Length: 47
Image (cartoon, rainbow, N blue to C red):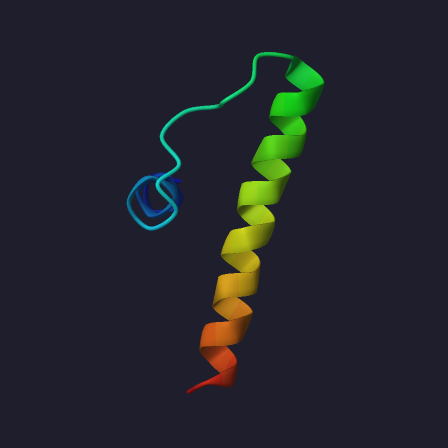
């Protein structure tokens, strides 16, 4: 979990949630995780 947390802070400049509603926070977390997965897929394609 620490690696994921560090990645989101450093690479994506994602330090804190920009919204407060729990449903919107879940959506925002899902979006960040989706971006991380897309980045992994793209990196694998260019190896």
